Length: 234
Image (tube, rainbow, N blue to C red):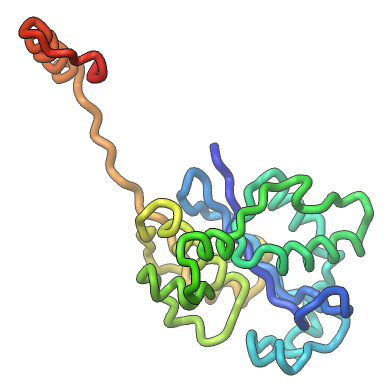
């Protein structure tokens, strides 16, 4: 079983080294390339002001965040959700750096995410597949035909859902089949319920019957009697 978490964050600014903090975490679970019903979504009180430049990107205001939990309140739930999974992130060093910083502030007992998870950076893959081209999430949506019309502003849970479709297209040659719906996130935030739920469609697999296999084997034996080398087909 391959368990992956498609993950995104929003922050108060560009660098945790300058004291900026995480204000939103959105993660969706995918097992064997199929989305499950397991989500993680929280808005977080950063205990500081959101910079104007960051506000212009995600639109999450200081007033909105005032009554939200602080990171230490959600740290264990977040760590339990991602522990042991492969994290699929666009521009992973940014998000991982912030999350490692936040976990380290809570307790030294939390390891770095790279020590307990595998990190898969879709930006690195995009640059390998499309050198010299724009490889932002919006650019990849356009390239792979992924609908991002709801993405007027950045949002961690919405971006994670979009990234899941982009990732499937980049790594498997197909865009996942999604259906609209609504779902309560694991974090319980009301804003999470307004996001569209999308689930991956299942491809039908048709196996040969025992009779068909016997007929195929008999056919190969007849060909071999005529001198054909069919070892590969066996």
